[in-house]
Every structure is written in C-alpha cells, then in structure tokens.
Image 1 (cartoon, rainbow, N blue to C red):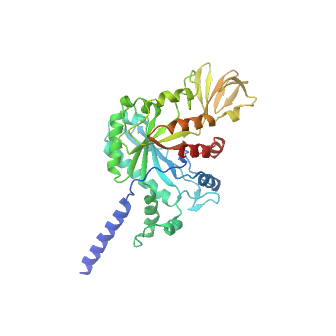
Image 2: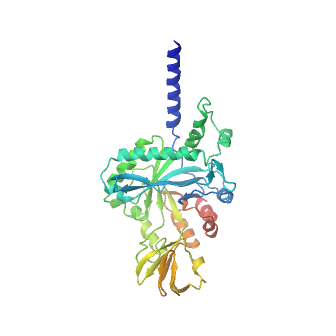
Image 3: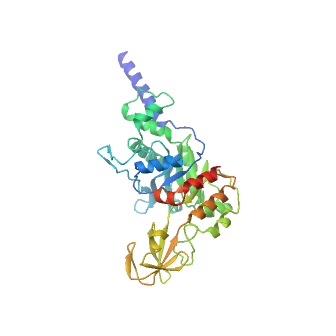
Length: 383
C-alpha cells in the first residue's frame, strides 16, 4: 500500500510539473503606448533606461532572442546569434542594471529567408524553435524578472508545492503571451514560411503568433500573400536598396511612403514600427563599400572629414579608414535616416489606416528617443 501511495504521489507531482511548464497565458490585446524593439546582441538595460521607458508608458519589449539560418554543413536550419545576457557575474546583478520584468516581453525570432528555400519538415522546425524559446525563457526568468515582487503582485495563487527552482520560470512564462516571427518572405518562399507559421501556432496553443510585414508585402499582398498569423507588425523602414548609389535614403524615403501604403486597410490587425536608427552608406566611384552603423547627420555635419555635396550626401576630404573601410578623398557617404518631422508625419498617415492599432519603434535607443520626441509622436497617434 505504501509503495502504491508513493507511486501515486509521484505521478501526481509529474502531472503538476508538466501542467505548470506547459501552461500558456491567453492571448492579450495589443497594448497601446510606446512599445519598442530591442535588437542589440547584448541585453543592457540600466536604471536610466527604465526611467525613460516608464516616462513613455512603455508596455512591451519585442526582445530578439535569436536568429534562424540555414547551415550548409548540417543541411538544416540552426539557431544563431543568440541574445547575450552577460551583465551578471556569478548570479549577482551589476549595480547599474535593473530587471525588465515589469514589461511584457515578446520573444522575437528573425528567420533568414533562404531557410525557406530549402526542403525540410516545418513541424520539426517549429518544435525546435519553440523549445529553444522555452529554454531561453528559463534563463531570462532568473536574470530579468524580479521574482520577489512578482509574488507580491500576483493576482492569483500559485502552487507553492512546486519546487522553488520552477517558480521564477512559471511566473515569467505567465507574462509571455506572444511570439513574433520576423522574415522577409518572397512569393517563392511564402508557402513554406506560412506553413511554418501554422506549425508554430499548433506548437504553442493559446499563444498569440504574430509576424512582421514589410512595406512591399503590405502593398503587393496578392503576390506576397497574407501570413496566417494572429496579427502583424508593419515595418515602416528599409524602403530601398542600400547598395544602390541612386537610392535617396534606404532607411526612410518620405516620397515612397504613400506608394507603399496606397492599398489602405489590411486583413490583419497591425502595429506599425517606425525607425529609430541610421547608417552611412559608403561609396567609391559609385561602388558600394559598406555601411557605417549608427552614423547620423549629428556626427557628419561640421566634421572636417566631410564636406556636403547634396542633401544627405557628403564627400570625404581625405584618405582615411572609416567604419573599418578604407575610403579615399572624394568618396561619398550617404546618410540614411528619418527626421523627427518625417516620423511625425508618418504617424499621422498611419493613424488613418484602420488596421493599424498602435505604433512601436525600432529599436531601443535613448538618445534618438529623446531627439525624435517619441513621446509626442505616441501621444498624437493615440489621442
């Protein structure tokens, strides 16, 4: 009898643990407010970041967990470029860092389009991606979630019979109600990609599965198709080829926006992501040489290394190594970035599209958030 009782108790515990690990929150409504993407390779979120986020009323972080690319040697999709959370030493948090558990975290996975040019089992990939997300959630649960405060704020009782080691994981899991898939699919790859999206929904019951939608996919929806997702994020940037010397502005070109958005409404509810990033496209005799990430007019205007040629274009005044690229005197750098006025006007335009329910920003950059007056853009859109 005792042996039977022990076996019964063990089985009950296994069921309890399995239920806790598999429990998924109900899909939530898209929160209003200033939401942001975090696309850096290392998670660094300090006290000043949190103060700024709170002042903006930020509700959610689209946190890039990892990418998925095709491995020629393994002949299969593999995870690459996992987000590094390295500001802990032996489990002790650095003094200037704070936990971001107060915000809703949306695991965001970038899938390289060439993956879907290959032949593989999409159900298997969905299972592996879902498992990798769960593993990363387990890691983040102990590093970005304020476990003690979670228990104090809990709106429902938790099963205190569960091992302590599982408590932070389960609490963190309760905050995650969405997974976002980011892929610039093409008419050639859309069927396999859409099949993968459906497989992710099947592998994550009760979870919202969202997809990013490029501007050309929004405009050319008959060719691109509509992803079988619960909702989407319209990426309002990267409007032209950065390597083309005739491109006016690869990040944001106001003259192209109306053309991309002319089809109006969309079958999915959308959040529109606006750009808070810039780069300098480097050219030698009209040949693309590389990108200088983060370069903006503030660093170029008045710098003796450059002389203005035309709007957004500057000429190098001397031979130099710039952004790890050897540039000669007379070579050109084209600045690709939106202006604060352009983002405000884009927000006004997006507010007239019924499918666009909210706006977000790509990506978290405190200096640009202030310079672009993001708080005013959010207030204007949501009023």
